[in-house]
Image 1 (cartoon, rainbow, N blue to C red):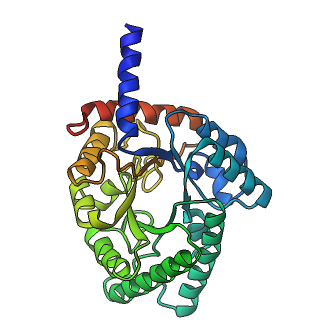
Image 2: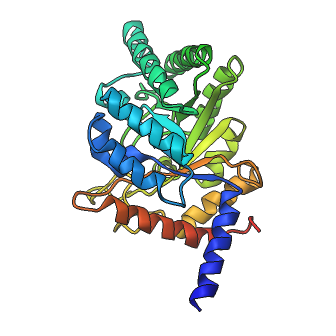
Image 3: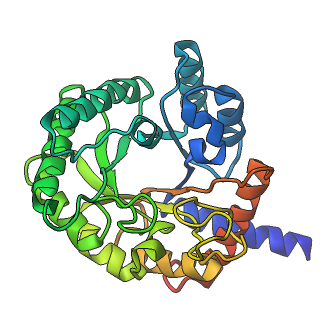
Amino acid sequence: MHGARLERHQKMDQSMATRMRLGLVHFMAWPELGSGRGPWAETVELIAKHPSFNAIEITHIEDPAERERVRDICRLAGLAVGFGAHPIILGQGLNLNALDEGKRAAAVSRMSELIDEAVFMEAESFVVLSGKDPGPKERKEAKAALAASLGELCAYSAARQGPKVVAEAFDCDVDKCCLLGPAPLAAEVAQKVASQHDNFGLLVDLSHIPLLGESPRQALEPVIDWLIGVHLGNAVLTEGMPAYGDNHPAFGTPGSVNGAAETAEFLDTLFDLGFLGQGKRPMVSFELKPLPGQDPELVLAGALRVLAEAWGRLRSPA
């Protein structure tokens, strides 16, 4: 009995590994790392030694020596690396679509510095989020400002043979209230940037889809031509409940809306649209944030079980 179950799990792991590189948004699993300080090497090593993971998404690491240790761990373990600029953008109130040119330029300048760090870390992607949606009267100008900022970052990274610049779609009216949220708007910005830069793409997060009121197909189909990566996560939509909004709680959190069924629908849509498939292996990362008192490793173990159940429900993979 045990042998048959183990064999099924091994076949699932092999099937999954040919279609995607499973990753983790590391600085969400250990939220204290968003400050740039904390047990970076120790916790990255936990993921590097875990056989399920082929990728990791990190952020700014303040100590250069610790930065080098993390890079060497990832290199030795063969982990693909993504770099997320979110903690810096949100923590410093930066806005890539600011209509004030000085504020927009300051955001681009800080992101350029982080691209240099991402190059050192051998990252393949550099993920950013837009600033706030200024509302319908100024939205057109904000979209133009965002496209300009993303284009400048693409040019900067390309000149350094750096990572692809990736914009992530967030909610537009619940929590982060970002400009780059609804799929049609994300597609419009992406088309403008990608027409001039071949190192640009988009990222869609399962956690944000219910916050945007979209279905997986509504969120993915308009942007599929520019899609580079995806995140798997959860959300609570009931105001007043713990983890309400864009807080990426563990699967199974009371009041949350994503589980194995929703994850399976999301992955099936990605197969239908051709994003996942034999030999393509894009980065697909968990993004989950433990609530106070929760053990990150237990949250991660639960996520792996949800993914295993979702994978078993899929129509698409053999």
